[in-house]
Figure 1: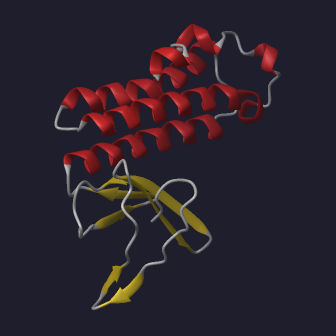
Figure 2: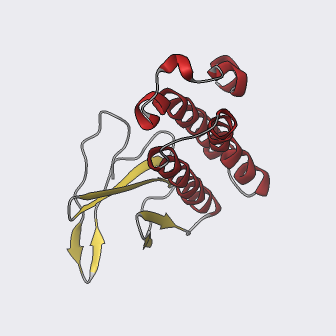
Figure 3: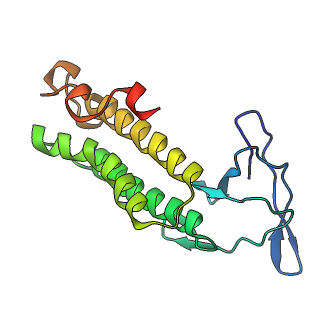
Length: 170
């Protein structure tokens, strides 16, 4: 688990049949939880608020990590699942029509919006998910030339056609 980009990762150790570890408190209560095993890396952001100690029960579902101890962590896990599905579609389809490309980019933001509507998610986690989903949508748009082996000029729409400006998101 890490706190912020400058933090050093913490390696969990086995104690009484469970993995345990400690991290410094994050000023925003969000932590990146990463598991590296058998040359694979799985990651998800988790929210821990105002607690000195917390037990996190991680579930591994295929190539996804899931936490369901709070509404925030359920929402973050679901967003991670939806974004991973969109990423797989981006990188495994050989050909996409312009409409399919637009829907894929919009899908990242739609994933956030669907989760945010459910309720029970704190504002700071909603804000993180909003920024993260928009950044991933832009990343998907930028990845079309590499993923689909096409020229950038052949993308039949601009990012501005499907995504709000960064000033609207931030």
